[in-house]
Length: 160
Image (cartoon, rainbow, N blue to C red; front, side, top):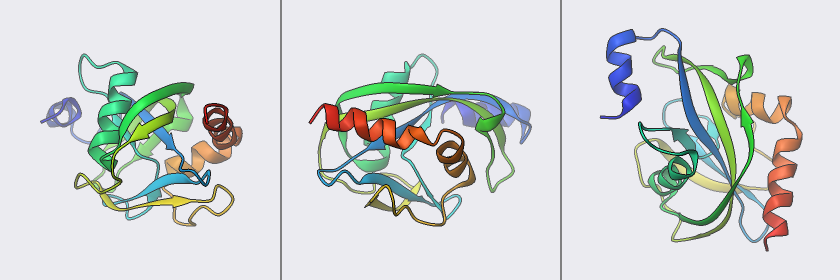
């Protein structure tokens, strides 16, 4: 059982402060990888919460492997998001504010496949044709920090 699950046993659904990562993974067509999440039944970016003792980089590598079966060879943090814009409420009632480190996975290897119970589907999308049913926090990040997707793509292209 992870840190967040243990903490939830003590605080219930009350808002907590967490740290985690959001991952931008692009393919050779410059399409961004998204996951259809089982909890929301909506699309979001791969990523997740930090465990005790982990660095942001370690969290990014672990979450990428857990959720997509891909292994990061090279990654770069491009922004840290925090504050009221990171608030989210999960369908089970859990509330949180997250300090989110946004990474571009510049080089990776492996075979893309669902590797955990958090994903229903993994799919690459053209950045100008993202799915309509995106989680509210992902949509908020993309609207509030509109340049974040273009910044991530530019970082990826600079390394290929």
